[in-house]
Length: 115
Length: 116
Image (cartoon, rainbow over all chains, first blue to last red; front, side, top):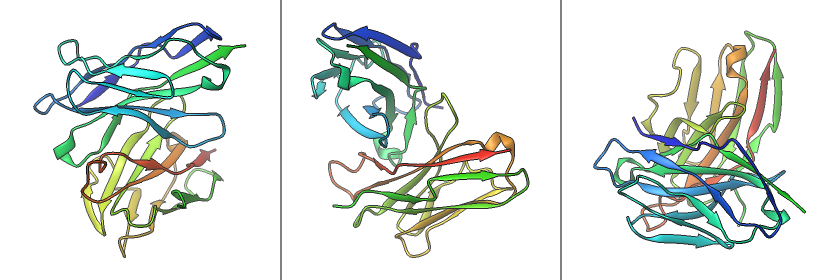
């Protein structure tokens, strides 16, 4: 079946420093899944941060970026300068669009930004 | 626009007890999903509906779990005889009809279940 791997369970970064959260995936269909980053801020529900449905394209939102790398089967999340308000849990996910859009999630990466 | 609502927000049970979770999706969304999220894991799909029809329930433990969406709007997920291994957060999500954003899911706040 499909799978998503996030290797870092918890990351601590100082405010204004750069961030990268790793995500790799395996898709069992034709291999062109839609890719997502969801985020859960403290006390809030899970919400979409960004998505990319075309290989080679980059998605961006709230200063975060992620590029769909089909060759490396990766979708790493990056930000040049984090803020304390970015502290949250980030989930990488995929869906195989024409298979009904169900999401397969990674285990999540908890980001703590030190002020 | 109101988001996805779920109730109750918390539930504590003894093993063997039954519990029901209720979800009200965003108005106009035809697809509704139920996920189980154990602690320190990502959400895992249990079942999803398009209107009132079950599209995929292959990950739903059918001996104890059931889910319905009789009018294609609200949905209920029921655990007949809870086990400690069912301890998790249960998330409901919905998505709009066939558009470019159909694969964007909107999540409710979840119900946190503890089975003692």
